[in-house]
Image (tube, rainbow, N blue to C red; front, side, top):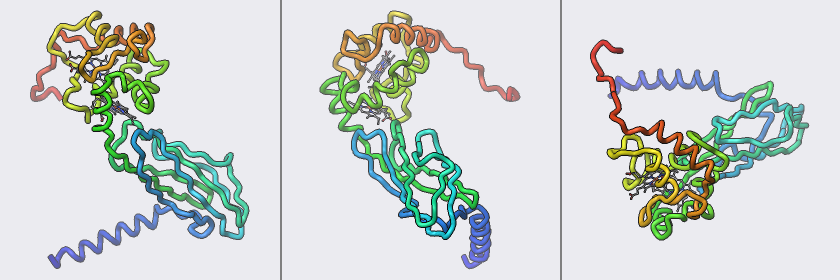
Length: 255
Ligand code: HEC
Ligand code: HEC
Protein backbone atom coordinates (compact mmCIF):
# COMPACT_ATOMS: atom_id res chain seq x y z
CA UNK A 1 0.00 0.00 0.00
CA UNK A 2 2.76 2.35 0.98
CA UNK A 3 4.36 1.75 -2.36
CA UNK A 4 1.42 3.45 -4.03
CA UNK A 5 1.98 6.73 -2.31
CA UNK A 6 4.94 8.02 -4.27
CA UNK A 7 3.13 7.07 -7.47
CA UNK A 8 0.06 8.92 -6.35
CA UNK A 9 1.92 12.06 -5.56
CA UNK A 10 3.62 11.90 -8.93
CA UNK A 11 0.30 11.70 -10.74
CA UNK A 12 -1.14 14.46 -8.60
CA UNK A 13 1.84 16.56 -9.46
CA UNK A 14 1.34 15.83 -13.16
CA UNK A 15 -2.31 16.77 -12.84
CA UNK A 16 -1.43 19.96 -11.04
CA UNK A 17 0.98 20.89 -13.81
CA UNK A 18 -1.63 20.19 -16.48
CA UNK A 19 -4.24 22.17 -14.61
CA UNK A 20 -1.86 25.00 -14.16
CA UNK A 21 -1.08 25.04 -17.86
CA UNK A 22 -4.69 24.93 -19.05
CA UNK A 23 -6.74 26.45 -16.28
CA UNK A 24 -8.58 29.52 -17.41
CA UNK A 25 -6.47 32.42 -16.36
CA UNK A 26 -8.51 35.46 -17.25
CA UNK A 27 -8.98 37.77 -14.62
CA UNK A 28 -9.00 35.53 -11.68
CA UNK A 29 -8.26 39.08 -10.58
CA UNK A 30 -10.04 41.18 -13.19
CA UNK A 31 -13.48 39.60 -13.16
CA UNK A 32 -15.39 38.67 -10.07
CA UNK A 33 -18.23 36.23 -10.65
CA UNK A 34 -21.16 35.93 -8.33
CA UNK A 35 -20.86 32.19 -8.97
CA UNK A 36 -19.12 30.27 -11.74
CA UNK A 37 -21.16 27.14 -11.14
CA UNK A 38 -24.91 26.86 -10.72
CA UNK A 39 -27.11 23.86 -10.09
CA UNK A 40 -30.77 23.64 -10.97
CA UNK A 41 -33.54 21.10 -10.58
CA UNK A 42 -35.81 20.93 -13.64
CA UNK A 43 -39.51 21.07 -12.91
CA UNK A 44 -41.66 18.29 -14.37
CA UNK A 45 -42.23 18.98 -18.06
CA UNK A 46 -39.74 21.85 -18.14
CA UNK A 47 -37.79 21.83 -21.44
CA UNK A 48 -35.64 24.94 -21.20
CA UNK A 49 -33.58 26.10 -18.25
CA UNK A 50 -32.39 29.63 -17.86
CA UNK A 51 -29.26 30.65 -15.98
CA UNK A 52 -27.80 34.09 -15.27
CA UNK A 53 -24.17 34.62 -14.28
CA UNK A 54 -23.32 38.00 -12.80
CA UNK A 55 -19.86 39.45 -13.06
CA UNK A 56 -18.03 42.58 -12.01
CA UNK A 57 -14.83 44.04 -13.43
CA UNK A 58 -12.87 44.58 -10.23
CA UNK A 59 -9.66 45.53 -12.01
CA UNK A 60 -8.38 49.04 -12.69
CA UNK A 61 -8.49 48.51 -16.45
CA UNK A 62 -11.08 47.68 -19.06
CA UNK A 63 -11.89 44.00 -19.64
CA UNK A 64 -12.86 43.03 -23.17
CA UNK A 65 -14.90 39.87 -23.60
CA UNK A 66 -14.33 38.65 -27.13
CA UNK A 67 -16.24 35.39 -27.28
CA UNK A 68 -18.56 33.03 -25.50
CA UNK A 69 -18.55 29.33 -26.38
CA UNK A 70 -21.14 26.91 -25.03
CA UNK A 71 -19.98 23.29 -24.84
CA UNK A 72 -22.90 21.96 -26.86
CA UNK A 73 -25.58 22.92 -29.37
CA UNK A 74 -28.20 22.53 -26.67
CA UNK A 75 -26.84 25.54 -24.78
CA UNK A 76 -27.17 29.12 -25.99
CA UNK A 77 -25.68 32.19 -24.35
CA UNK A 78 -26.93 35.75 -24.34
CA UNK A 79 -24.80 38.79 -23.57
CA UNK A 80 -24.17 42.31 -24.90
CA UNK A 81 -22.76 42.53 -28.46
CA UNK A 82 -19.14 41.40 -28.85
CA UNK A 83 -16.54 42.61 -28.23
CA UNK A 84 -18.03 43.51 -24.90
CA UNK A 85 -16.10 46.32 -23.22
CA UNK A 86 -16.48 46.23 -19.50
CA UNK A 87 -15.19 49.38 -17.80
CA UNK A 88 -13.54 49.16 -14.40
CA UNK A 89 -16.10 48.67 -11.64
CA UNK A 90 -18.84 47.76 -14.12
CA UNK A 91 -21.30 44.89 -13.50
CA UNK A 92 -22.64 42.66 -16.22
CA UNK A 93 -24.52 39.47 -16.83
CA UNK A 94 -24.21 36.48 -19.12
CA UNK A 95 -27.36 34.48 -19.58
CA UNK A 96 -27.47 30.88 -20.71
CA UNK A 97 -30.30 28.64 -21.84
CA UNK A 98 -30.11 24.87 -21.86
CA UNK A 99 -32.53 22.81 -23.93
CA UNK A 100 -33.04 19.65 -21.90
CA UNK A 101 -35.46 17.88 -24.21
CA UNK A 102 -34.56 14.20 -24.40
CA UNK A 103 -32.05 14.49 -21.54
CA UNK A 104 -32.28 12.78 -18.20
CA UNK A 105 -30.57 12.42 -14.88
CA UNK A 106 -27.74 14.72 -13.93
CA UNK A 107 -26.22 16.68 -16.82
CA UNK A 108 -23.59 19.34 -16.82
CA UNK A 109 -22.85 21.96 -19.48
CA UNK A 110 -20.05 24.47 -19.78
CA UNK A 111 -19.84 27.96 -21.22
CA UNK A 112 -16.38 29.37 -21.96
CA UNK A 113 -15.97 33.13 -21.72
CA UNK A 114 -12.98 34.38 -23.72
CA UNK A 115 -10.99 37.56 -23.38
CA UNK A 116 -7.50 38.43 -24.64
CA UNK A 117 -6.11 37.66 -21.20
CA UNK A 118 -7.65 34.21 -20.86
CA UNK A 119 -10.77 32.12 -20.53
CA UNK A 120 -13.29 31.73 -17.75
CA UNK A 121 -15.43 28.64 -17.43
CA UNK A 122 -19.03 28.70 -16.27
CA UNK A 123 -20.62 25.41 -15.24
CA UNK A 124 -24.32 24.65 -15.43
CA UNK A 125 -25.50 21.54 -13.63
CA UNK A 126 -29.04 20.32 -14.12
CA UNK A 127 -30.89 17.53 -12.46
CA UNK A 128 -33.77 16.23 -14.55
CA UNK A 129 -36.23 14.13 -12.59
CA UNK A 130 -38.01 11.20 -14.19
CA UNK A 131 -41.47 12.15 -15.48
CA UNK A 132 -42.03 8.71 -16.85
CA UNK A 133 -44.61 7.42 -14.36
CA UNK A 134 -46.73 10.55 -14.55
CA UNK A 135 -46.56 10.76 -18.35
CA UNK A 136 -47.45 7.13 -18.69
CA UNK A 137 -50.44 7.55 -16.41
CA UNK A 138 -51.73 10.48 -18.48
CA UNK A 139 -51.17 8.58 -21.74
CA UNK A 140 -52.92 5.49 -20.44
CA UNK A 141 -55.97 7.61 -19.65
CA UNK A 142 -55.78 9.36 -23.06
CA UNK A 143 -53.31 8.16 -25.70
CA UNK A 144 -53.64 11.55 -27.46
CA UNK A 145 -52.35 13.32 -24.32
CA UNK A 146 -48.83 13.36 -25.83
CA UNK A 147 -49.99 16.02 -28.28
CA UNK A 148 -51.39 18.34 -25.63
CA UNK A 149 -50.08 20.94 -23.20
CA UNK A 150 -46.49 20.59 -22.08
CA UNK A 151 -46.21 17.12 -23.63
CA UNK A 152 -46.30 18.84 -27.03
CA UNK A 153 -42.93 20.48 -26.27
CA UNK A 154 -41.23 17.17 -26.92
CA UNK A 155 -43.82 15.16 -28.81
CA UNK A 156 -45.14 17.76 -31.30
CA UNK A 157 -43.02 20.93 -31.61
CA UNK A 158 -39.89 19.16 -32.92
CA UNK A 159 -42.04 17.67 -35.71
CA UNK A 160 -43.65 20.90 -36.88
CA UNK A 161 -42.81 21.59 -40.53
CA UNK A 162 -40.73 18.42 -40.82
CA UNK A 163 -41.17 15.69 -43.42
CA UNK A 164 -39.65 12.31 -44.25
CA UNK A 165 -36.66 11.11 -42.27
CA UNK A 166 -36.52 14.21 -40.07
CA UNK A 167 -40.19 13.81 -39.26
CA UNK A 168 -39.64 10.19 -38.31
CA UNK A 169 -36.88 11.16 -35.87
CA UNK A 170 -38.97 13.91 -34.29
CA UNK A 171 -42.43 12.33 -34.18
CA UNK A 172 -41.76 8.60 -33.95
CA UNK A 173 -38.13 8.23 -32.90
CA UNK A 174 -38.83 10.07 -29.65
CA UNK A 175 -40.64 6.91 -28.51
CA UNK A 176 -39.53 4.13 -30.85
CA UNK A 177 -35.81 4.92 -31.03
CA UNK A 178 -35.21 5.84 -27.40
CA UNK A 179 -32.77 3.65 -25.51
CA UNK A 180 -34.86 4.29 -22.43
CA UNK A 181 -38.26 3.53 -23.91
CA UNK A 182 -40.80 1.49 -22.03
CA UNK A 183 -40.94 -2.21 -22.90
CA UNK A 184 -44.35 -1.85 -24.55
CA UNK A 185 -42.86 0.43 -27.21
CA UNK A 186 -41.68 -1.95 -29.97
CA UNK A 187 -38.70 -1.47 -32.24
CA UNK A 188 -39.89 -0.75 -35.78
CA UNK A 189 -36.66 -1.81 -37.38
CA UNK A 190 -37.24 -5.47 -38.17
CA UNK A 191 -40.89 -6.20 -37.56
CA UNK A 192 -41.72 -9.86 -37.85
CA UNK A 193 -44.75 -9.27 -40.05
CA UNK A 194 -45.49 -8.05 -43.55
CA UNK A 195 -45.46 -4.29 -43.74
CA UNK A 196 -46.03 -1.91 -46.60
CA UNK A 197 -47.63 1.35 -47.58
CA UNK A 198 -51.04 0.56 -46.06
CA UNK A 199 -49.54 -0.83 -42.90
CA UNK A 200 -47.53 2.33 -42.15
CA UNK A 201 -50.30 4.62 -43.31
CA UNK A 202 -52.85 3.08 -40.95
CA UNK A 203 -50.56 2.96 -37.92
CA UNK A 204 -49.54 6.59 -38.40
CA UNK A 205 -53.08 7.84 -38.94
CA UNK A 206 -54.91 5.83 -36.30
CA UNK A 207 -52.35 4.37 -33.92
CA UNK A 208 -54.00 1.79 -31.73
CA UNK A 209 -56.85 2.33 -29.40
CA UNK A 210 -56.31 1.02 -25.88
CA UNK A 211 -52.51 1.33 -26.22
CA UNK A 212 -49.99 4.13 -25.85
CA UNK A 213 -49.63 4.47 -29.64
CA UNK A 214 -51.39 7.73 -30.53
CA UNK A 215 -53.24 8.65 -33.75
CA UNK A 216 -51.23 11.21 -35.71
CA UNK A 217 -53.73 12.29 -38.40
CA UNK A 218 -55.33 15.70 -37.94
CA UNK A 219 -58.84 14.25 -38.38
CA UNK A 220 -58.06 11.86 -35.50
CA UNK A 221 -56.91 14.66 -33.22
CA UNK A 222 -53.24 14.30 -34.15
CA UNK A 223 -50.67 16.90 -35.27
CA UNK A 224 -49.65 15.68 -38.76
CA UNK A 225 -50.85 17.12 -42.06
CA UNK A 226 -51.70 14.95 -45.05
CA UNK A 227 -48.43 15.96 -46.73
CA UNK A 228 -46.42 15.00 -43.65
CA UNK A 229 -48.12 11.60 -43.41
CA UNK A 230 -47.41 10.88 -47.09
CA UNK A 231 -43.76 11.84 -46.71
CA UNK A 232 -43.44 9.66 -43.63
CA UNK A 233 -45.00 6.65 -45.37
CA UNK A 234 -42.61 7.17 -48.30
CA UNK A 235 -39.70 7.23 -45.89
CA UNK A 236 -40.80 4.18 -43.92
CA UNK A 237 -41.57 1.87 -46.85
CA UNK A 238 -38.06 2.40 -48.14
CA UNK A 239 -36.27 2.39 -44.77
CA UNK A 240 -38.05 -0.26 -42.74
CA UNK A 241 -38.57 -2.98 -45.30
CA UNK A 242 -38.94 -6.29 -43.57
CA UNK A 243 -37.73 -8.34 -46.43
CA UNK A 244 -35.09 -10.63 -44.93
CA UNK A 245 -32.08 -8.45 -44.39
CA UNK A 246 -28.81 -9.88 -45.64
CA UNK A 247 -26.28 -9.42 -42.90
CA UNK A 248 -22.80 -10.34 -44.03
CA UNK A 249 -21.56 -12.98 -41.65
CA UNK A 250 -18.66 -11.72 -39.60
CA UNK A 251 -15.83 -13.84 -40.96
CA UNK A 252 -12.26 -13.69 -39.99
CA UNK A 253 -10.23 -11.57 -42.35
CA UNK A 254 -13.07 -9.39 -43.60
CA UNK A 255 -11.92 -6.42 -41.58
C1 HEC B 1 -45.90 8.11 -27.32
C2 HEC B 1 -45.02 7.11 -27.84
C3 HEC B 1 -45.16 6.74 -29.30
C4 HEC B 1 -44.99 7.54 -30.39
C5 HEC B 1 -44.67 9.02 -30.40
C6 HEC B 1 -45.14 6.70 -31.55
N1 HEC B 1 -45.43 5.44 -31.16
FE1 HEC B 1 -45.74 3.86 -32.41
N2 HEC B 1 -46.17 2.69 -30.81
C7 HEC B 1 -46.11 3.08 -29.50
C8 HEC B 1 -46.54 1.95 -28.65
C9 HEC B 1 -46.65 1.95 -27.15
C10 HEC B 1 -46.81 0.89 -29.54
C11 HEC B 1 -47.33 -0.53 -29.17
C12 HEC B 1 -48.82 -0.55 -29.35
C13 HEC B 1 -49.39 -1.87 -28.92
O1 HEC B 1 -49.62 -2.02 -27.72
O2 HEC B 1 -49.57 -2.73 -29.77
C14 HEC B 1 -46.56 1.37 -30.87
C15 HEC B 1 -46.72 0.60 -32.01
C16 HEC B 1 -46.41 1.02 -33.29
C17 HEC B 1 -46.48 0.18 -34.45
C18 HEC B 1 -46.88 -1.29 -34.47
C19 HEC B 1 -45.65 -2.14 -34.41
C20 HEC B 1 -46.01 -3.59 -34.43
O3 HEC B 1 -45.58 -4.31 -33.53
O4 HEC B 1 -46.74 -4.00 -35.35
C21 HEC B 1 -46.09 0.95 -35.52
C22 HEC B 1 -46.01 0.50 -36.95
C23 HEC B 1 -45.81 2.26 -35.00
N3 HEC B 1 -46.01 2.27 -33.64
C24 HEC B 1 -45.38 3.31 -35.78
C25 HEC B 1 -45.19 4.60 -35.30
C26 HEC B 1 -44.87 5.73 -36.15
C27 HEC B 1 -44.65 5.65 -37.64
C28 HEC B 1 -44.79 6.80 -35.33
C29 HEC B 1 -44.55 8.24 -35.72
C30 HEC B 1 -45.53 8.83 -36.60
C31 HEC B 1 -45.03 6.35 -33.98
N4 HEC B 1 -45.26 5.02 -34.00
C32 HEC B 1 -44.99 7.15 -32.86
C33 HEC B 1 -45.74 4.30 -29.02
C34 HEC B 1 -45.46 5.41 -29.80
C1 HEC C 1 -38.88 16.61 -21.99
C2 HEC C 1 -39.43 15.95 -23.17
C3 HEC C 1 -40.71 15.16 -22.97
C4 HEC C 1 -41.89 15.62 -22.48
C5 HEC C 1 -42.23 17.01 -21.95
C6 HEC C 1 -42.81 14.51 -22.55
N1 HEC C 1 -42.18 13.42 -23.08
FE1 HEC C 1 -43.02 11.60 -23.39
N2 HEC C 1 -41.24 10.88 -23.98
C7 HEC C 1 -40.08 11.60 -24.10
C8 HEC C 1 -39.00 10.71 -24.45
C9 HEC C 1 -37.55 11.12 -24.69
C10 HEC C 1 -39.57 9.41 -24.53
C11 HEC C 1 -38.86 8.09 -24.85
C12 HEC C 1 -38.69 7.31 -23.58
C13 HEC C 1 -37.64 7.92 -22.72
O1 HEC C 1 -36.52 8.16 -23.21
O2 HEC C 1 -37.95 8.19 -21.55
C14 HEC C 1 -40.97 9.57 -24.24
C15 HEC C 1 -41.86 8.51 -24.23
C16 HEC C 1 -43.20 8.61 -23.97
C17 HEC C 1 -44.15 7.50 -24.01
C18 HEC C 1 -43.84 6.05 -24.37
C19 HEC C 1 -43.64 5.23 -23.13
C20 HEC C 1 -42.25 5.36 -22.57
O3 HEC C 1 -42.12 5.91 -21.45
O4 HEC C 1 -41.27 4.95 -23.22
C21 HEC C 1 -45.36 8.02 -23.66
C22 HEC C 1 -46.65 7.26 -23.55
C23 HEC C 1 -45.16 9.44 -23.40
N3 HEC C 1 -43.84 9.75 -23.60
C24 HEC C 1 -46.16 10.30 -23.01
C25 HEC C 1 -45.96 11.62 -22.63
C26 HEC C 1 -46.99 12.47 -22.06
C27 HEC C 1 -48.44 12.05 -21.85
C28 HEC C 1 -46.40 13.67 -21.79
C29 HEC C 1 -47.02 14.89 -21.14
C30 HEC C 1 -47.71 14.68 -19.88
C31 HEC C 1 -45.01 13.55 -22.21
N4 HEC C 1 -44.78 12.30 -22.69
C32 HEC C 1 -44.11 14.58 -22.10
C33 HEC C 1 -39.94 12.95 -23.90
C34 HEC C 1 -40.90 13.77 -23.35
